[in-house]
Amino acid sequence: MQRTKAKAQSKKANNPISLASIPAKSTTRISTRISELDRVLGGGLVYGQVILIAGEPGIGKSTLLLQLADKIGSVLYVSGEESVSQIKVRADRLGIKNKDIKLIEDTDIDSILNTTYSLKKDSLKGIVIDSIQTMYTSDLSGMSGSVGQVRECAFRLVRFAKESNIPIFIVGHVTKQGSVAGPSVLMHIVDTVLWFEGDKSLILRLLRAVKNRFGPTDEVGVFSMEDKGLISLSDPEKMFITTKKDPLKPVAGNVVTCIMEGTRPLLVEVQALVVPTKMPFPKRIAQGIDSKRFEILLAILQRRANLPLYEYDCYINIAGGISIKNDPSADLAVCFAIASAFYDKAISVKCLALGEVGLLGDIRNVTSQEKRIKEAKRLGYTDTATSKEVKYLSEAIRKYLSK
Image 1 (cartoon, helix red, strand yellow):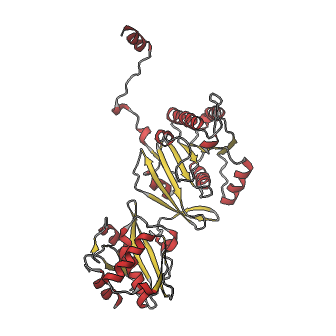
Image 2: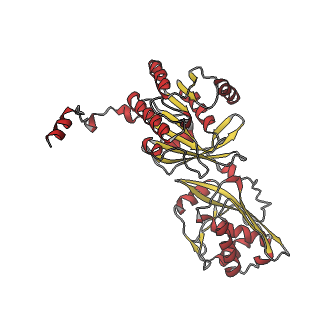
Image 3: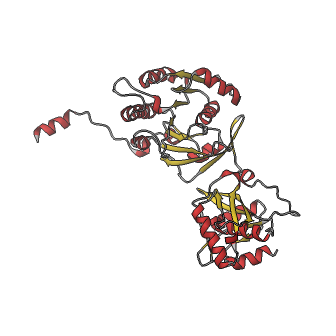
């Protein structure tokens, strides 16, 4: 007992700090001047914030961070994967000519931090580490990317960020299973985890906050990958609604609905094609929605709306490359699109279909329904098909396909 007490007394005591006495600067936001990134972060960066950004190779992580460095000013960009000449080539392609961006090729975390200490007098605004899996410290054995090396390097970066009040962006690799490579503690010790996703064959990119100590985790940033880099899309409906709307020439099999990405309503276009077949097992192909959910909706259409779809191949697609696999609010739009393609009758171009369809053919309310309808009306969709207007799918098809 006395030995334990003596050991405790030998430790230097920390002085508690009053919450009210903490300087306001510690919670001041720094705008990244990239609107969609600011949206996901909750209004901008916080001094000393450590952000882990992960995503598949080639999705645009390094491009986003190089554009960020150009926007916020004096930034140290640490590359463990590319040479400075390769980064220069990318910067030229993106039109970046900021002289305050400093590049180093290094993977020794202690050497990097020593370099950073020497640059603090130059009002360093941020640090980019690309990537954490290439970093190492000579204090530990093991290769770069090992559990111990990743954990220790991350701890040292976090400690430096808190001491210096300089925000740090860390690039993280992902595994085949879709999780961040390295120890699970990596996601726990950083302040924010951002997930960059999208189909590399398309230009759409989505940035989500998986964890955020200084803001919400239900916001989504939408970007377009162009020749000159990533472009923030403040009005992404222009990408998702691809068909030119001509009131005089509506197209059969084309219906607009509204999904929620976090707290953000997005209008998307559902496209359907129904083709007669003589094969014993007709095709059911879905892109952008869950294939099993699509088969359920086809069964509901056959049983509750008397559509003989067992004699037809059915195809469904969500335009723009976005996925709505976890949002049942698009059920009614999918059913409308299939029925419209089957009868070859177009639905009004000003109609928005919104609702979950039950196995009994009933149409149900969806979350944030009023917010979605308000967004649709703002964009000119004045005719809404929801559970307020119609209660059952068969009734809805008769009503809206006859207009």
